[in-house]
Structure formats: structure tokens, C-alpha cells
Image 1: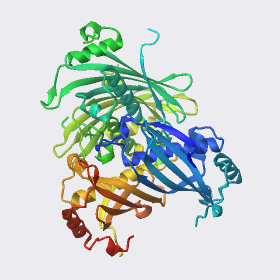
Image 2: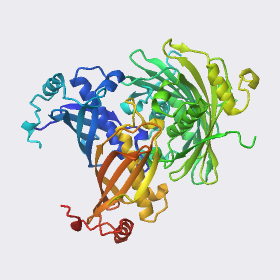
Image 3: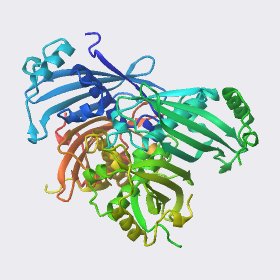
Image 4: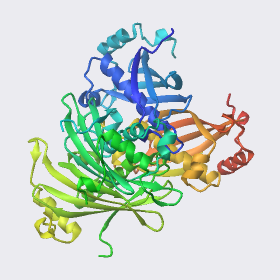
Length: 151
Length: 151
Length: 151
Length: 151
């Protein structure tokens, strides 16, 4: 696959994103990723991007791993590639690839696990079938966890 | 003047900008303003937008007043209008007008004073003539403080 | 008055608060002020500091003016002095004085106006009598706006 | 080991740390971790906590993985436990354990890898012997990577 992240979110680096080291602070990468995640889910799940809907998404970010590959500088534009890798019973995995600059060089890669959560019951709940279908339609392939060879 | 803020900077509201009240946090408005201020100065003074140049600008934000007119919500785009109102001996004034949404309704107005500062000497220094000329060229009018009827 | 800000909130400067200029970013001062404002109101109004209560406070920050007096550096501690200056019919004024370092030198001063707001009706509402009494008890003096010689 | 994180950093949760979901935003956890990391290194390496020193630390955060265990709420205090797990030739690993509330319940765990970097040469450099000794003295044990059974 030459271009495995179909969904792209553009981010303008703000002066406030930069820290005393002169490049974008490590924590801000997660805000960029969050922006990509929310836009992806909003579009894939057919919900308008508004705060109410976002806050009502019954999701919890359970785990995230990030590899920092290169610094991001003020004045650059960042592109956040987002995809869903697999869907399990009560959780699913998202991956992100961040590039920056005119040459779109790699600046970070992340993997993350989100849990479908029933806030009223206070426990994980099965990923809704509707979501599964929409996410698979977005990715254009089966996302069944077992089929991905994931433990 | 039908359009008194010629310089515009577009800001995409991020999920991280929103606080527990469900709208963009009051402190984040100042980051939006900062983004407009830096882009304006970078363009007017003919410096590329890069961190090195920004950090070398011999400027201090001395004062800022902001009127919050309406909340900004996630999913909206903000436009920051920026202009220079007057230039004094060692300081100059900038104003910003923030609008949001498809109807570009007013969300905030700010006035601010910046001081031209000689960091090595540790004291204010006269606004460079070169800056004065470039800022007046950008605004298309004299910015002499006395001429503005400012105390 | 040798000590006119009775209420103090201590803030530990975080590395993330600092920007590329090497000192605390101008927008972060407003987060420090916010922290002082919320703690003051929480204590004066007899509400526990919890998010639910804070988000339910029927208040809007309408205006804020800040004078930046000195930079704040990483490793310093900031103290935010907070007081209420006057209470009008539907609004009241708060002032803050920020000091930093071992010598508690002045770093910023702010004045602000908050509006008592009825979110369900979508308009300002009179400041509750109960609030007026509690705020005056906290300040130890009358806060009637007219009596302050405020326009 | 009943208490494996000897180094502790206390963090006061700020209102600005909270997002529209009503708890501390996922990216802010990394700012808390950063605060713990910098204080640990500052103390272990015998450098005063000042920006200049921090910005001169020849270190790059290369990788971080975080497990979010529970939400953090406004009004809570967070404690960041920090330790060094191993030191390799040009990199070393830090782990953090975040707890919150009066019962110090677990809210997040992270592992991270930092690279000792020669900025002038633009490439990784061996971890200085001096650092190795100081970090081992802080942890009270050998930190040799091979000895930890790490690949």
C-alpha cells in the first residue's frame, strides 16, 4: 500500500505549540492526534463535528504509544493520517502517522486503543454493530481483530 | 471603513481549546490573537515565519485588554483580524477583531500595546524607522501616535 | 492597605507554560488568573472545588485587561492575589495581582468584569443576594458599585 | 518492592487541564509526566531547575507509551512517580506512575525512551559516564541495560 492512511487532517502549528526547546512540545503531538481522531470518527460515524456529539461518544482512550521521529517547527504544517486497524469486542485500534513540511517528512507515528464504554453502567460495552459497519466501510476492508493476526 | 482589519489569520478550533464549560477557554483567545499578531508582523516586516525570527523580534507584550462578545465552539473556524493603530517612540498599539462561524459573527475584540525592547541593554528602545515605514505601508496610512489623537 | 489581596493561590510554573521566548507565555497568565478566580469564588461562595460546581456557576467572563510587568521563568512559583472590587446589578469586578519568585516581585496585574448569566433564559440576571453577602463577607467591606465611585 | 518510585512530583490540576469531557485531557497527562521527568533529572544530575539548563540538556524524547487507568478530575492533586529503568549506550528508559486523589489511586502508567543527543553533530551520543553514575546513585542499583534482561 503506497498510501495506507486515507484520512488526513491538516494542522497549522501555532506559536503556543512550541516550547523552550524551540520545537513543538511532546504533549502537543497528542492534541494533533486527537484532532485527527475526532475528525475521522465524526466523518466515519456520520456525526457532525460539534462538541455535544463528541462529548457523547461513548469512548475512552485506553492506551497510546508514540514514536517521535523528527521535531516539528513553527511555520510548518502538519498532516495527521488516521486509520482504524482492527475492531475487537469492546475495543478498537487506531493508528496515526504525522508528517510535516513541504516534503511531508515523517515526524511521528502512534498506535492507540479505544474502549467502547457505557458511562451509565460504568463498564465497557460491545462496539455497536453500526460503528463496525461504518468503520469497515471507511477503511474498505474487514477490521475483524482475529483476522488481523492480533493477539 | 467597511473593512478596517485588512490582515486576516484563520484558526481552526481544536478540541483541546475547549474547556469544561463546553466552549473555547478564555486564555486560548490570547493564543489566537498571538497567532494573528505574529503572522501580521512577520508579513509586514518582511521576515519569514520561523521560530528563530520570531524569538529574535525585540518586542514585549506590555498590555492587553479583551472583550469577550460570544462563545466560540468546537467545529467553528475563527478569523483574527489584525491591524496597527499607532506607533509611539518606543511602543506601538495593535488591535484585533475575532469572528467565528459561517456568518463571521463577532466573538472578541482586543487592544494591546507592544514595547520595542533592547534585551542586551535591558530597556525599551525606539521603534526602528524601518519598522515604522513597513507598518505604515501595510496599513496604508500614517500611524504617528500624536496624529491619532491618542494621549 | 499594605496587603490588599487577602486571597492567594499558589501556582507551580510548568515547563509546558514556557514558550520559545524562554518565559511563561502571555496566554498562560490567564490560566493562572483563572485558577485564582475559581478558587476564590469556590471558597467565598461556599462551594466545593469540583468540576460540576464550577461548570454550573452562572458566570461569564466579559472583559479582562492585563498589564505584563515582568517575565515569569520556569522554576519560579507564582502567587495569584485575588479580590472583588465592586458588585453591580448584573455584574461584578475582580482584580488580580501576580507575583513570582522568592522576593515576590510583581509580574502582572489584571482587572476583569464577570456577568451573572441565566443560561436558560439567555440573558444577564441580577447577582444573587446570597453571593453579594458572601463576597462582602470575604472582602470585609461593602462592595456596592456606586459606593466605589465607579461609573 | 512496596514503593518502587522513590521520586515524586506533585501537580495541582488546573481548570485549563480539563476538556469538554469533564476530566483532564489525554495530552495533559504528558505535561504532568514531563514535569516529573524534568524535576527528576534536574535533581539526579545536580542541575538547578532553570530553563537554561533544561533547554541545554542534550536529550530527545524518542518514544512514550501511556496506559490511561482512570480519569483525573479538577480539584484533585496528582503525584507523578518517576524512575530510571535502564541505561543503554546512547539511550535510557524512564517510567512514570501517576496517582491522584486522597487515596492515591492509579490514573496512568508510562514508559519512555530518551536519547542522549549531540545537537552540534546532529546524532546520538553515548550517555555521559557522569550521568550514568548519578542516575544509578539516585536509583540505588545498577541500571546497566543488559543486566535488566532488556532486548
